[in-house]
Length: 149
Image (tube, rainbow, N blue to C red; front, side, top):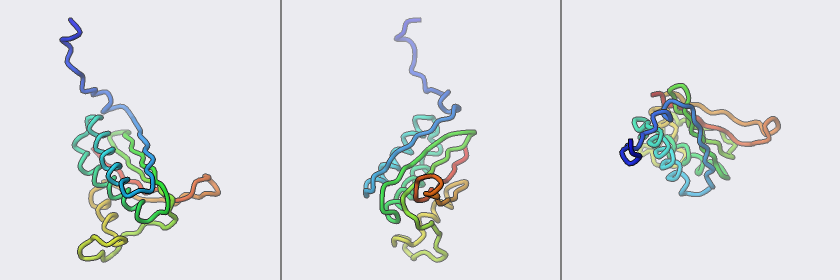
């Protein structure tokens, strides 16, 4: 068969193989948009568009929280394993996240708890943990969420 007759592959093997991406996000108001776009692009390229909308929202909320509540850069990690996308966001902040019991009525006030309420509503599972700089040499925290296929 001539080479020009071969149709482009959609790379279905990538959908089922394990993969991981990591993106360093500077302390910058543009970082949430870059995290959102990256999550959407990665999932589309790996033939997982059905998770793209939720992943975009979650990436945006987690990166926004990093920018609003931590004094330095962040790192987004996006991985696929066993039918699950896991997104984690590391930041330099020492304040542990919390969901406000009664967020501001419009939900737009920084620190209102709106972002983590959205994470809880749209992720299949989520959580956080503090990092011990004495043990790991890295300070801050990681907030993670999972999306099941």
